[in-house]
Length: 168
Image 1 (tube, rainbow, N blue to C red):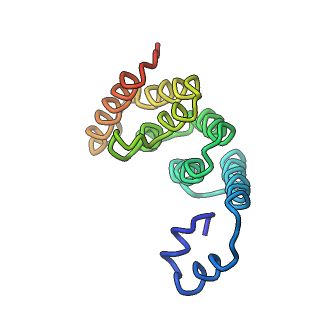
Image 2: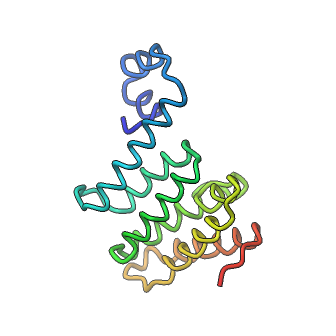
């Protein structure tokens, strides 16, 4: 279930989720499992041993990172994007930028920029803001993504302003 109790509860609440809850797994153990899964995804991306689109893998990693909330796990996201940056298609660049900026309303502070900033690492937040803007510096090969590209740029600049991050 990819370390997700939500997926477990959604897919098979009567069997898997209820049995899992009875095990009384500690939060520390769950975090350890999530860190292992994060590294598994990272290795799959590095080796190209998975046919899942890069942005989907990045999103799966993000879902783990937001529950781990450690500087180390966030740095893995930086390393991942650096490793795949040149291989991303235009639509994937926009989708990953949305993950970095956050897909929820800004007041909910979702995304990797806010997560980095909120754990106290302003340098990581700045790095993600720069990466997001670099991802969005692209020529569109699909007109359907024009508004998403524009919205993502706008959101990134608003976050930069909100957090008073200097990005050159």
